[in-house]
Length: 283
Image (cartoon, rainbow, N blue to C red; front, side, top):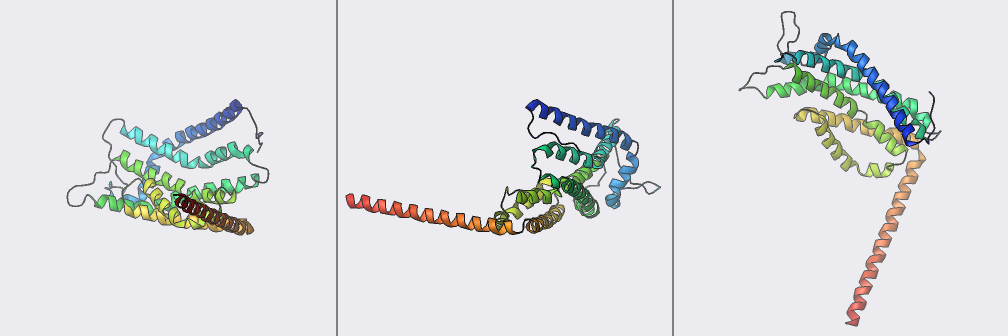
């Protein structure tokens, strides 16, 4: 893959960004046209994990409801668009990484292909995890809330929309290991410091899990929370293996800095005490 110069005028950078965005948009449009023809099959596939909570026709297919003349078109277009996003995710990730590639040092560019492969694999893993382990308990909890006072009437636009949000949300959430890994590898955040702040990190992941899941179910939130903690710890382990002795040196540097700060604070407190004593003696 040709690599552009690291230093370019602003308008050249904007031109390259526009070129890559155009490639992404063209791929999405082409894929959307293809997937639009297959939306009935895709809809049945998306609804497979939650079909027991929905009515069926004589052939055993899941039935949804549309309440407007244009709702069916909107639902089909939505399914085609989001299916295109998932299918074109390798192209999107490639274009995004390629845009930032010239800014990397030569020894850092060796991570390009592994990063691309892992980003694609983690996104797919997130969608598969959501499809197999999240949708069923999520919709079970949500539909159970109507028990005793209402009957659930599945509306196509809303059910498809929330399933798509689940899938895309989990796909992006599973990119967390790459973010953590490169924060440590590029020493943006020292490993020892990140390891020491594990309580704060866990709380942050819990909040992020609540934000990403599109429903109000604690079941899905804690399932995502558990998955993200596992991925976080795996990324920290991978960073520790790759960095080796650097982590020990980082820890020693943090301890040295903490010792110097403590000594400086003690010296400052002593000066303040002596000054107060001198002021008292003058009075």
